[in-house]
Amino acid sequence: MTAMMRPSSSEPPIRRYLEHPRGGPTVLRIVLGTQLRKLRIQKGITREQAGEAIRGSHAKISRLELGRVGCKERDIADLLTLYGVHDADERGQYLELARQAGMPGWWQQYGDVLEQWFETLIGLEEAASLIRTYEVQFVPGLLQTEDYARAVTRLGYRHASQREIERRVELRMKRQQLLKASDAPRLWAVVDEAALRRPLGGREVMRGQLEHLLRITELPNVTVQVAPFDIGGLAAAGGPITILRFQEPDLPDVVYLEQLTSSLYLEKLDDVDNYMSVMDRLSAEAEQPKDTAEFLRRLLAEA
Image (cartoon, rainbow, N blue to C red; front, side):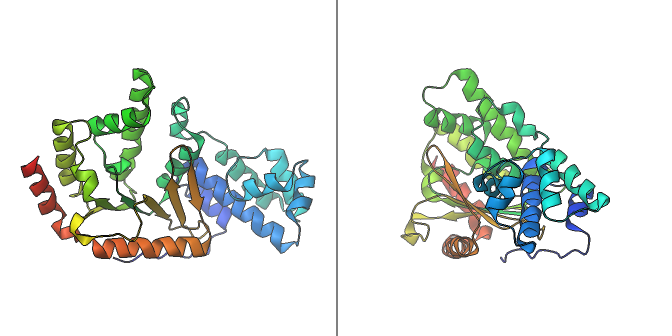
């Protein structure tokens, strides 16, 4: 299975995203930041100089160019002037993109239980054309049943109230809806056998989870492989990995590494290439997708 190629487009990049939005504000912030960075570099302007123009610091410009934060329209207008963008139509497109990038995504309604570092992942998933993931301890979040997700949440948030637990589970279930959308991404998951044998939530919860995996792998855009115990050590050294790829040429591939109370987002080409190689080796060593259903049926028979 090969990585997706990205289509080229002759449309002006800003107009293309305004006319064909995909992925919500998270991705629009990244697109806006990427375009502003290109303008700054073309003019030979430093981040420090750009920061002074908007009464900020070079760190603020860095965060803006990475799409990590939104920005006031006044600041965008000042940067466009600094970068020599004076055409009214072009400026209008940038400002409209900034307005749309500042709109709340559907996940904002879960702000009471949504960590900022995880919010970025949800926004990226909404825009991805391909999501590749490896999990060793749990079934991937996009493939969890409600009962299994509740057990996972209780394990990770032992002191949370019942209301908070249910809010987190509700968020996870809503997040999964993207797999059945008209423009759904491809999901390619490698799951360690340990995650499938660990009876999280009890026997009946785990049976329900295995049955759900059997059903969801029938979707044409979902591929699941099992990494069995008998293949020995794995290239990922036990850590979960998610790689997101996008069809849009202005969006770089992103590697997401989740930690206990935070996460890392890697975008540098060398980092992404290294993790893509790891994922390729995992997929080559794991059971082939055509054997997944039979593997799951054997586990169900033993459960």
